Amino acid sequence: MNDYKTTWGEKFGYGIGAIGLDLSYGLFYSFLSYYLSSVLGLKEGFLLLITPLARIWDGINDPMMGTIVDSTKTKMGKYRPWIIIGALSNAIVLSLLFTSFGMSGTKLYIYIAVMYVLWGMTNTMADIPYWSMVPSFTNDPKDRNLVATVARTFSGIGQGLISILTPIVLPLLSEGMVKTDKGYSADGFSKWAIICGILLVFFAVICVLSTKERHVVYNNEKFSFKKVFKVIAKNDQLVVFMIFAMISNAGWYLTSGTAVYYFNDVLGEPTAQSLFSTIGAVGSALGLLVIPLLSKKFSNRTIYQISLGIAIVGYVLMYIFGPILKITIALDLSYTIASIGIGSMFVAQTIFLADIVDYGEYKMGTRNESITFSMKGFLQKMAYTVQTIFLFGGLGLMNYNEQITTGPVNEATKSAIGIICFAVPPVLILISLIIFRTKFRIHGDLRTEIHDHISAKRASEKSE
Image (cartoon, rainbow, N blue to C red):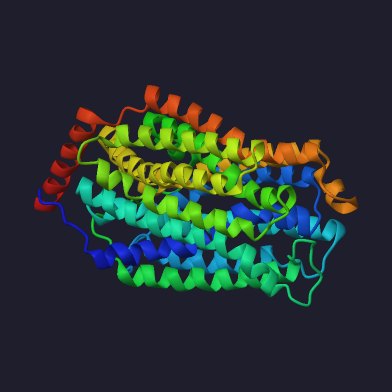
């Protein structure tokens, strides 16, 4: 069977959609915590409570959405209608989440809790169909790797834009308003969220108009928890993936979510975060080249292990040059090394998920792309929950909220922020690497056998 190969126009069109998703995603995961705690002044205990509660609902909502997508059949296809619906819904909720309408007290806590949960739901509506499309483009393994690499490249661009521009744009949008001592305001965050929401919808439209679904398997079964549990329970490699990916992603989120505290409260140089993020974005871009360059000599399994090893080395250097020696330029350069490993890690994880979809069909006879890819979004949210526990648990123990209200952050709290941002992540990534090496089996002969089985099955279905 000759596998269709996607055009570069289609690859880029698909990838552009990831920019918008990650503008919303990056603003939520990298700056929402700071906005809620340092701008709105919400208590750490509330944030520690709402995050795991939202994850409980996500555990129900994400696979439910995956089943709905799997059963969707329209003239536009299976995935693309949901990308538009999800992007529009998420853009509206993102804007509302970062707009407090002058509320305070109990009303504000309730409002933020509702918007927090709705952001996760609407993000799922767009994220699951978007990443689930990867296997539908082509059955060719190398072309599939390239599609995933391009998408992760643009995803990194979206994350990079948020990280680089937010510290610069927020003070500009906050002119003439009530601001924190670092130049940020609630109204500035609101305006920035609205801009990001508009761009999210714009890029989603480009994505939908530029792509075509080819290898689509429709599933007319209704949603049932029994089916979801069956898909997860019988796909042992999906479970393994969720564990090692969640742990490594949590390490990365700790840095992206805590960096704003480090540069604002530890260094007192909020705009320095832009240079830090710019250098990290360069590293992430270089990391996207790791798989294409090394795939000629090494398997995806080996490349993934190399990627995690690079990330660990970079993190160790960041902790040495950051909190210990306080040499900012060396910290930034070390971040480049860590970002190379992380960028490659994210691409490989997307590729692994596409392989896991094939593995599930190979093992069970049925194909469940969207349910499988819904686990990607869920594990990312779980990783964010781990980040929240470390971050707000640590800040709560150090009485951070009280310190920013009454005076400067003390040295003990600054040390804790440095440890959370740079020392905890490499430990989590190392644990993830150990689990991957010992438990993940889709490589070598098994991966080849799975691909041949799926190709033969598609050829048989086409000839009937």
